[in-house]
Amino acid sequence: MKKMQVTKRVAALGLAAAMLTGCGAQGAASSQSAASAPAETGDSAEAGYTSLDDFVLWNEDGTLTTTGRDAAGENGVVSSGKYEASKIGRTIIEQGGNAVDAAVAVGFTLGLVEPNATGLGGGGFMTLRSAETGEVEFVNFRECAPAAATPDMWQVDSEGNVIGGQNMNGGKAVGVPGYVAGLLYALDNYGTMTREQIMAPIIELAEKGFTVTPTLANDMNNSYDKLMLYSESGKLFLKDVDGMLMPYNIGDTFKNPDYAKTLKLIADQGAEVFYKGEIADAMVAATQKYGGLMTKEDLANYEVEVMEPVHGTYRGYDIYSSPSPSSGGTIVLEILNILENFDLPSMEQDSAEAQHLIGSAFAMAYADRGEYMGDTKFVDVPIEGLLNKDYAKKLADKIDMDTAMTNVLPDDPWMFEHQDTTHYSVADKDGNMVAVTCTVNGYFGASVAVDGYGFVMNNEMGDFNVGAGHPNSIAGGKTPLSSMSPTVIEKDGKPVAALGSPGGTTIIATVSQLCSNLIDHGMTMQEAIDAPRIKGFRDTTLDYEGRFSEETISEMEAKGWTMNASDDFNRAFGSVNAVRYAEDGTLDGGADPRRDGKALAY
Image (tube, rainbow, N blue to C red; front, side, top):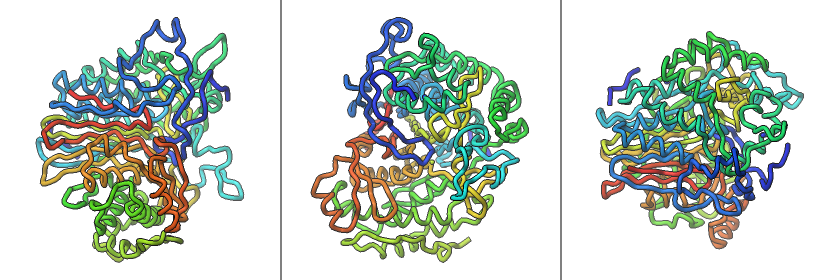
């Protein structure tokens, strides 16, 4: 590995309620299940063709299966939100590529098969461990605001809400995308294969088509109104049924030859064609058609940034995660630092005692996040204070083991200051680990598709606070606050795990719980992913997955928590795709049954 350098309202047949939660958007979700619609025959179902091979993702009633998501191997393991992406990533490793080559291939594949969550018009973060150097570095390819963006760029009503949702839909919601720049930067600097080698299987899949899952069918159905409002998106993500545009059904085959064309251009010309060539022209035209501010200059000036990750320790393990402009890594480490003051390893993971501590840590750390976090290039953020273990001890001392915390306010980390999506993870036998969280923010981003090129633009500007005077207020060139937390774990200098999740602000809670499951409770990767989760951080209210015992919930309520029940496996609680190095030397990958994830190994 080279040394790193200094980036669809029409109900489709049989579909049920929405599964709501965006990759980087701060949305909530309801049930993950969808009633089954039979796959169409003939052209739509391609005479029985499925891109899922023998992987069974959903049951006859359309609910997602909860088993068969893990995999183990000796040479490499890939865990992503889609089977097809993991398959292509594994193929790259089989062909001699390293974990970074596979990660780049997975990223470009997800842009095709998971367009509801991510894609070329978006951005993300990558935390990467190099086997050659032993270093862990962070690649920031998050979207940024166009140069002309200002806090008054959106009209607001008397209550401060953006009129017409212009910060979430249409051109003014679009940030300058970093996705292509980031993936190609990683390939050029840390990979071993060519763009042509990486793109070839993805181009073939785009032309042949992939199978529409319950998750994607639901998201197309639930986004129908806004996809129809933006005609280019409707044409791309809806199917023609007797002259009407309709959402795809579960089991349909979705082809995207325009995406194949785009990848061919990138394979041939690199990032130049995307940021300065014909694709850049098309992105600017699409964005400005719907009132956007992004220009060719914004695209040409975009730069990937390589940074030091935030680093902390938890019970002897080194945790590396996302620095500012993400709040994720810092707040994950703050939560773990608080929890380190308690004997969690002696507690059952699903006990009221453990969940009370985790919920209390959430409350305090999220309060600090809302008060202090922003892009450190524009505002002062007490990062060192938030990461300080003495500060965490001060917060831990506030926890009463018998009573839920009320009226939680941010504390003062300055006293200790000394100077939001899909996720995938890849590891190889040499010790290269890659954790990538990437997004177009909300479902299908801003719904502004780039006509003729097969992808949609992000609505990342919706992650800025509305108005001036907040650390996360919008400014030209500024990156909005995020919760994305691609994380790498080591112990004694050796690779242990790469992990992360989508889910907006819930990402932080999900990643924290996963780290605790692995370290405190010695779980396998799939066990750690499958374990029931909680989320929430306001007004002593916690949402919980239905697999907690009645006893645990009763004890939590007796402590003063308001406990809101959810499904057994609920997409709103994140969707982890993670890999680890097991003690016997095998590479162990786990994927989340709360969505479409699948790990594959070689």
